Image 1 (cartoon, rainbow, N blue to C red):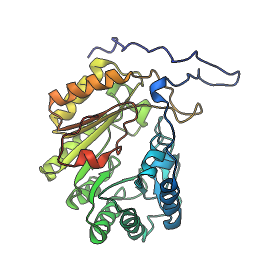
Image 2: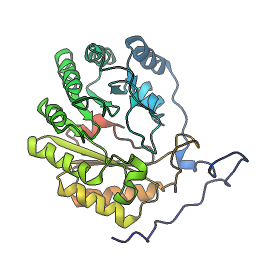
Image 3: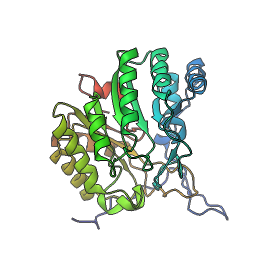
Image 4: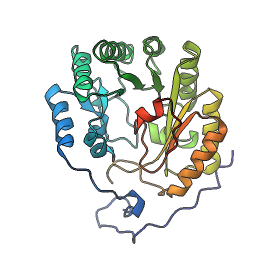
Length: 314
């Protein structure tokens, strides 16, 4: 594999700036990564509902750049099993450490109530990684899926951790038959440990997606990668080829944005929107059924459109 042919680094939209105490050079965002924050009562309604029902969202915990847009449309990606992750990924703003409590018993009921009150037709449920639990939180995912189905007619997408220590937990989630099973690759093999932490394994990610298809060939699988972390064109296309070999159906490609200059991995480059467009075309030619590719694309961004029957290309 050629790891020397780095994609060209784009110049910043404005001159770079540094401060005496900064750990990294801080680049101003290019023009295509600047957007107006949607305002309106729907933002307050969604945020207020999460607070009222005591629910966590990955939107807030991971500092997603799309959270105000999603909240303004009365949607959110629910994060179950608490807000403390047992992994130490170099890109993620979610708190890390030892979770202080076991899964909260009534969380599935509160989540289903939020889905009902928001009027969601498609719901995305993700979680922190819970290596402290024997089943990795698999049974709690199942209970959330079952309760949402009991209360609503929404289709369900799960975005799961890797279940590396609990394959039976993975099998329980698949047996609950979510409409879409999503697990992110995030980056290329050369960068995997630095991005996803020492316990993560690229080949395990592929085995997980393959196992989902073995257990339920009809289930749509989905995977996402962040760009701008130092990957090469060859490495990225090799990853997409690996995903097609395990029959992954849906793909998301988005720009990595550093949550802050402290602790998190720096952005290697900002990928031009035209390059995202080109990658989307190549991915479709490789056989992915649906592709969302763009600077602001995240795993659950416009997830309902991707999960629907219409062709989707962002």
